[in-house]
Amino acid sequence: MPLILCILDGWGVSPQDKYNAIRQARTPHYDVLLEKFPHSLLSASSLEVGLPEGQMGNSEVGHMTIGSGRIIYHDLVRVNHELEKIDKNPQLNVFATKLKGKRCHLVGLFSDGGVHSHVAHINKISNYLTSHGVTVCIHAFLDGRDTAPKAAKQYFTEENTGKIATLSGRYYGMDRDRNWDRTAEAYRVIVKPSKHQRIFEKATEAIEYYYAQGISDEFIPPSVIGEYAGAQDGDGLFIANFRPDRARQITSELIGKTNFCEDKIKFSEMMTMSQYFEEPLPTLIPRHHITNTLSEIISGAGMYQLKITETEKYAHVSYFFNGGKEAAFPGEERILINSPRVKTYDLYPKMAALEITDALIKAIRSKRFDFIVVNYANADMVGHTGNMSATIEAIETLDNCLGELYKEACELNGYEMIVTSDHGNAESMYDHSTKLANTAHTTNLVPFIVVSKRVKRVNNGGLYNIAGTVLKLLDIEKPTELASDLIYLE
Image (cartoon, rainbow, N blue to C red; front, side):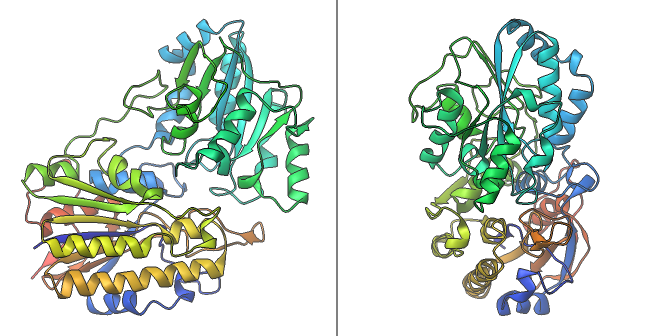
């Protein structure tokens, strides 16, 4: 029987009611699936997705774990390990040696969120370069999504204060939705700040100034710190994000891969933390080479598969789900629906869910696909805004889509379906420690519902068990490197 894997991005499970947008929302269709079909809970954080103990899950590791069917040590762990022996990294040693007596622009997300980067990595690389005679200019992207909304000040210490050249909220510096106007603002402050650019003596002064205006870390406008006047030909460039998706736009402009921005710089040496593009720059850690992923196995079985989502999650159902491979496998098709053009998704909580569902129903009716992966971004992307009422609206939108999907796929066209998530978010909308809205992911478990009349029981497990379960439902033999399935068939 054909199968749909429906990933409700950011939909975690928590017993709390008050600040739980999922429990506060009306979800009759989701509730019916829980009542009618076997279900369990899956771990989606920490060691079970290849992250350090206690580290919240995220969309990259979630989709890579689901798609590979095994625990893959995440780049956060790999970078931690590599920096423990930083003097022995040949690429970084060559990079530092060539830049001796020159400047290096060190660009990255400046927080301890651990999703895209880590401030400890930036500080360690900065200190290493300084010890090799390189003048370091840190261009700090502020977080506020994978951390509390106003957490930035704590990261600016004596260790790095004199090296901070510019600040920019990640809204500008880490856009991945082709909002090139945002990318251009972050680019300009790094490369050639305007004469009219606001200048602050210290990073903390800038942050306090914007906090007083009600602007949180994520949205702080690109700002100059101290006497920084721009980049020059011959400088070096190091991009410190280990997760590629939100580093690609700004990097492609800085290295001249794209040309949406003026005033291009010819950097003499360039390096990234991990591989962002097919044409690689030198990297601190090499790209994972994962074989026998779920998509590859299904393709090898001669089946046809579809991946469908909106722009915000496209890399997750394609690149990450396929184990870090950009190209589609034979028999794999992809549908990308454009995300709405709004500043923040609480302004349009439906996002592209309705359009995704329409396209998905058309694909189901075509009867061409044996396996379909759909990602709905709403619970995660609206949850990141910290807006409770908007997130409730997003959840109710998803529930309606789920009802349509169940009727069209399972009742009318003979599909089975797995409903799950990649990590938590929308189930915890308040941070009791900061007394502010929680905009970050969680370490909560996620749902695992198997919509199938053949399945009588489902075990608890981890995201790594999903691929084996998919193969069992599709009656494809599971390779030994994949984790076990979680279902008992009639």
